[in-house]
Amino acid sequence: MLLSMPLTYFGNPRETADQVIGLEKAGLDEIWVAEPYGFDAVSLMGYLAAKTETVQIGAGILNVFSRTPGTLLQTAAGLDNVSGGRAIMGLGASGPQVVEGFHGLAYDRPLTRTREVVDILRMGLRHEKLVYQGKTVTLPLPAGQGLGLGKPLKLLNRPERADLPIYVAALGGKNVAMTAEVADGWLPIFFLPEKAKQVWGDALATGTAKRDPGLGTLRINAGGVVAIGEDVKSALDLARPFAALYIGGMGAKGKNFYYDLACEYGFEKEAEEIQELYLGGNKRDAEGKVPHEFLELTNLVGPESYVRERIAAFAEAGVTSLQVTPVGDDPAATIRTLREWV
Image (cartoon, rainbow, N blue to C red; front, top):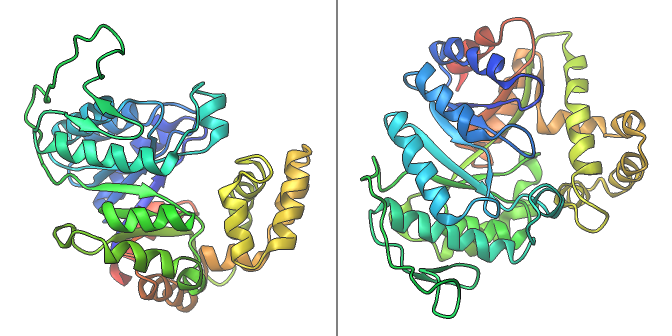
């Protein structure tokens, strides 16, 4: 199992990025950079490429609407070049609030768009000309649109790797099935190992049945907050604002994937309360409604024996990269400890 870590996009990301040097030396395998509607991930990934030597640098995630497939190809190939073949392309549809509210683009056919972007990326990374007839993307632009002067082009530079890993963030059944079919890896949020098969088992099986054997086994990156000790339960409270934000505020009623996931886990009553409070502006009260059981099972907080049990549960559920957010004064020490355990 690899050790992975998300880079926080709150505060000053550059200051957090500077800490990755020590974490890399401690044994961190992957660092993932998100952007939602904050600073762009690509700038920080380039910064990390120059600062580090061995850690893999993942986009976690770039949405498939706000950048054209050609731009995403340039980004993936460029990051892989400046990092010496250490880039991972994490993609996702994000949500309508971000795509339509922040970028001013229609949130149209997200699954189809994601699949077609993955297709085009693979084509471009093989250094082929971009000729594609899809439902959301057509390259070159067809006759009758634009000036009619578009012609098939391929990337000017030769990519470092044709098999640069492409991960997809997915939660819904159809999206997870598509991810299991076409992606190298899967980025599920709020992964609860004991209920993963119940929630996603059928979707994963459906996608895997259609998967190209050449892709190998689907990699899974999941985890949570980590604090090891006899008196660290309060660390779970650090995960409350994040859980409340996503379950309560990352989407409108009826259009929130994280709310739906909490319900599938069996926390329907609590999810409804969190959403009502959060959308009503009562964020602190919403945080207080996040169930302790939800936090306990989606994170790794407790004595050494318990954290080891949680690591084993994630591994048994198919997780190949344990994503951790160390809590405490010495994150590098936590990474060193986990490195020995995994």
